[in-house]
Image (tube, rainbow, N blue to C red; front, side, top):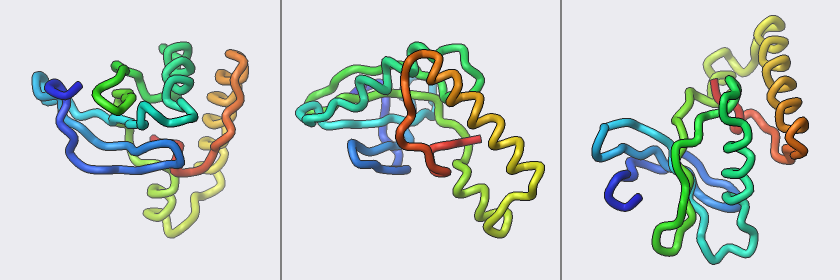
Length: 132
């Protein structure tokens, strides 16, 4: 990861790690990289990688590119998707119209069903986690 990807800037953080936009030094592709300390007691990233590997082919999740460990960090490189629902809602004056709300709801329920079918439960559903 060290030589292939260069971090551009931080785009988010959570309880278990940080997310950066990054550029592939060989292809100039832009992607998202999630980082988690390798010595973290809760290895959340490993579970997330396992779930995303099973969800390959889904139209509702960002595509997993690669994952591994570099130095003191576990990392996951994934497709950088569009803006999250929280940001998009701001552009709409703080709320979506009824039709948009229903369309978003149907898409979220569809991906939750896919996750449940695999035997997992998503426990952190919020607008900043959903990108379009």
